[in-house]
Length: 283
Image (cartoon, rainbow, N blue to C red; front, top):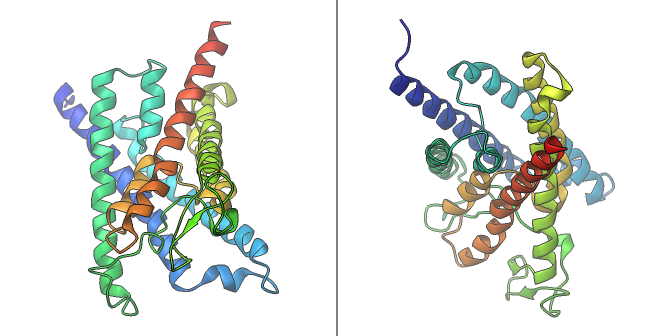
């Protein structure tokens, strides 16, 4: 029996919800595991955290490969486009590949998927990690893999544009204007590369089954590259979920500033990639 148009739309939205939920869930879950068990220190050779960052980043990126591949394979039949990311949806809308109504519904469902994933993980971490006895009232966005500038980026007690303002507890800081801008640009550039890959898949290969593999490999590589610099949000909803359920503590307002990097950076990158793709195709 052929599906009605209304039912097809429902399947599209369901696929976007499921895909967004699992990508956000998997990313934050891995971040929590790495933070809980101090894997950065374990992977650092002779206390060289640079080596630890590199190894950790590639481990993190490689895990995206099977997860994203399976999601794309399982959900492509629903014909939603498999965006799983508001930045991708906005980029395709900007390029006029999808209409405004379609894009708006997808973004709403993607936001719902990220909120459900964040809430589920908030409950999971609170129940599973007995070392965080105050988790329910004072969760930690960093513990949930919040993205933003990294400690080794910024100095201490310097001017706004060259360093950072530091609270009494120096583990909580507000990024300087310069470090915030650089981090935003890095997120934008990384997502620009991923969006460009999406828009040129048909040129890379005519075999649609290979598209899933290229997307998975591309995202895994870009995640690995971006983690040492910004935590590699590569999605507004991935950044949002960590903040919504991890920023209720004393320094919660700081995480909203950091979250803006992962929220707006991918959107900027997606729009720039779509604009360049339009200009290139017109020539």
